[in-house]
Length: 412
Image (cartoon, rainbow, N blue to C red; front, top):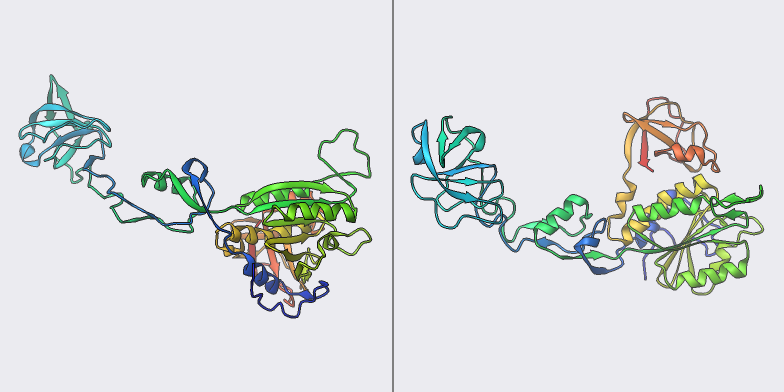
């Protein structure tokens, strides 16, 4: 995996260089390229990214069909209303009536059924009275003919779905309609999550002592990975032990496209995350980013695996995961990475203080295109994080923004 990293030539390998958010975003974008393609059954294609154009191999419908329940007729047989026509038979979806529509007769048809050759319109059943095998027409003919012409849905050679489409439920309808049992999709990135800390235990563990806390972050990171098209293949809690962390790192590097290391990304005595990956084959692409929260976030690679280190505080971890991990997972899985950086302009509900020399990403809620920052912006806050729906970006060096100023927002 060889990439030309924009603006990264001055980044020291020890990670001491502090880079701007936009520079870090460009580096992430350089590595957010699709991993490869694979064939999957239609049953398992939901949420995947299409890696081929779906071209129609036939007309749909292949024959004129009825758009309503009613009676197939020729116009000349109803030139004078009221009129009566004998019913020559019935045509059902999947069981058409053979033969043409004989002059002076009508055929009972149902929605989606092929109409007999010679049909010029379908008169809806609400406008017809049937008695003893005779259809009685009393209402003037409507302008609509209630017929679906061959190829009116799609014609042979039409593009039904284009490469890059997210296979949503309604997109799957189009793929199935094109008679595709298997689809070529981009491979999902395989993601491993190592959550570091002697204090972490599984949520709900009986007899938890005060010095132990539930591991909350790995569950949020896992959900974010799945949301943006990745597959979590490993998730574990790791003690603050460098030798054990090195072994865990070596194991997941062999099987993962992305390794996410949570915590151990600061400057404490037991912050071993970078050290666990430090060997001659590891390249640190950036080591610190001028953002708040999340300054210690880092990004590197080892052979074909990408490694992203997130801070240990919950809000910091989830904000940096949303800003950097989400576009990386999306891009590797075939989505345009900018899907994950879909910024929208809104009005701020209150004044925002200047952000100094770092970009600040404030957790916020949005109602009616008005963004309201949460009062508690503590990077360790979990209850406020659970209430947040968006981020507000305050750019480095930006002056104090008054209430109702236009702000940049990103959906969490």
